[in-house]
Amino acid sequence: MGTPFISDDFLLNNDSARRLYHEFAASEPILDYHCHLDPGDIAKNRQFTNLFEIWLEGDHYKWRAMRACGVDEEYCTGAADPYDKFIAWARTVPRLLRNPLYHWTHLELKRYFDIDLLLTEDTAPEIWQATEKILSDDRLRPWGIFRQFHVRAVCTTDDPTDGLESHQSIAGAETATRVYPTFRPDRAIQLDSPERWNAWVDCLEQRCEEEIRSLEDFKNALENRHQFFHQLGCRISDHGLATCFAEDCDAVDAESIFASVRSGETLSPDAQNMLASHLMLFFGELDAARGWTKQLHLGALRNTNSRLFDALGTDIGCDSISDLPQAESLARYLSALDRKEMLPQVILYNLNPADNYVFASMAGNFQRGPSAGKIQFGSGWWHLDQKEGMEWQINALSHLGVLSQFIGMLTDSRSFLSYSRHEYFRRCLCNLIGRDMERGEIPNDFDLSGKLVRNICFQNARDYLKLDLAN
Image (tube, rainbow, N blue to C red):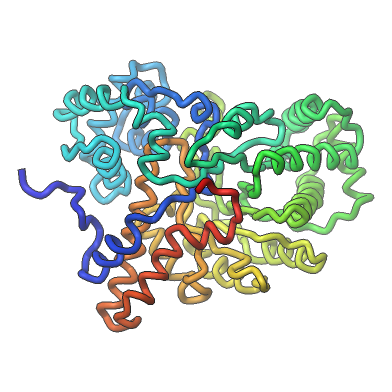
């Protein structure tokens, strides 16, 4: 049959890269500190019955590619039979040469199912049948996957109004993988629709069993939920924003704006930005007070296809890279917290590659001991979590910051088959470092470069995030 596509030296293009990967990177455990896995699936240790359920369900990366190849929406997000959706995906894959989905598809087939076949319409029936048998084994349930990939901790993404019942159930399990919530209060600052915002505040009110009539009530409720998340092991917050909110807004103005939107009034864009800015400072202070790490995912232009958004809602593969300015608002936000001595550890994720140097240089402005790498320029995100995007991010961080403090990769995924993304990242990292070694640009010293690689793969994130990890 010849050499399988996913070989032992996949993406490793020189001898130094191969040694770095196989000796220093491959065996390191995984700390998946940001993902969108369903904690309910983890709590019940879901049994997936076929490739559609574990591979295609909810994967908007694949939907985008399928639409671009002329696949009807019925086979992406519609009501077509799961097997027919898989066949539509199999028919798409051969057209994706040079797209990262081609790599990820075959890496996942190899690592989870030990399948070397290239996925095509012709091989799809055989692959479907083979994987159905393997999926009946406990090794392909969530906890089995965590064991197989040596996942030490998983941090899901959770709304403050979530009761976290699944996390409470998981917390009592004696496992080698810890699972923690992440506090993501984005809906608290989504003020464009007073109807949607007030409905969410009503849910928060019910969760806290206290009326929310004032801004102080609102903050108390959010602090209550922040504390509850903390009690369940949460040490990370997250915000997904087009750009950072950092307008001046004192307590008096914030209270007045809050009263207006709580009464159902539609706010002007300026008023929305002011209240959101006030609340973002409050969230930063909460994180700093409890020793959390804040994640800022910046630069997405979401829900651009209004027709599909109206029909299907969010997270359907119609989000793009934004070209909004980032530097000034981000600097104001970080500086305001720093001036108050309330700047927590922050991970900055950039979605526009044109801003890589902006983000890498911004992180350097707010470093402060004794926390090494306190402000992180995070790994390539979303449209940039592929080989070229990863290399761009690593290069920018290397040139403007300190690569040795980098906390490495995360899945940012809704799929339990995404743990091979860590392998993908590690191979890209080792290939870059190995290339520099062979060019004589860094010393040919594997003790030095091997330690760098090993730390980026796991140990930096472990030390930085200070999560309670299983032994």
